[in-house]
Image 1: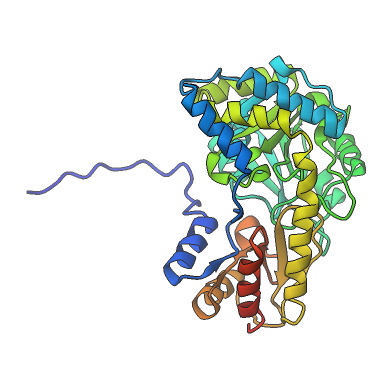
Image 2 (image 1 turned 60 degrees about the horizontal axis):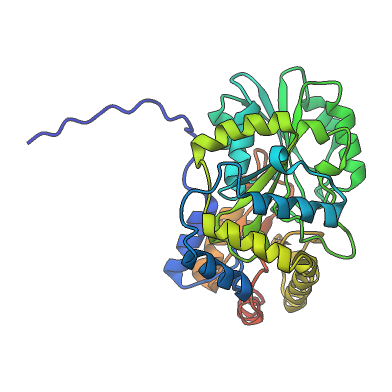
Length: 387
């Protein structure tokens, strides 16, 4: 019997396919390769935190949490911001717990961006920003970061900001490059957008992973931007639990009110026992976050030492758990083809940078994740030294 086929409308995201992270992870799994591509740790979450989740499951905390987030967790978030950054946050009106950082980014964009608005992104840019803005009907304006240090090119950024600019999306510490913004960067950004109606969305999910004695500087620390910004954070990155998908957004009350209108129809609320457990753990171990930078800095340095004899040229890493490597001395292949060959011939997965950019980079770069056990890094490095 002939089946009738429904005619689908034009795609709302015609240029979007499966993410490069999914593609490379699937190829790595099929080839049995060591996956240094997708950004997840192979360490376990803190044992005490896992125990607390079990306790709250057993205690019956299994129904909906309040839409903005469990009050105890929102209070713990505010205490964390005060202790680490000296920030004063209105617990009831400025904090919203979300289903990971990705949901927070999407909700922030859709809270304020309307069809015809312009959204400015800094390339390389994490791959969820653009599609979320396009779904809101925005026009993207992409500004390449300055090579070779991936700092902001303020002349090009100034040229991109105009009367229709609704939102500037910033990421610090920066995925995939590892660059970190300073307080002076926020001042220059404030200079550019203060005369306009634009707002800032700051992706700060790697806030605790800043190295070499530097400290993370949040957009929330800038008084000129405080009332016109969203700042997004992730517990998955902090607790080695990316699969829990729990993050949060901090914004001024008027922006939080609009943010929650979107959030309540995306996920409404997120895992109740996990919220309880994180709130308890943050109260019990307020200094846990402080140990993350030294821990991951040692991972960074160990990986760099292991690759010292390779033909890959490593770029400086100021933050995150990602290492950029220039493979120009090895191959002239495009980065996606090079990454596929790495998997097939050497059994190591990396992430190419071209999917993060609208314009080709003036270097041949791939990204490795060093949030791995010593044995994983050593096995991968042995293979990479033969490339």
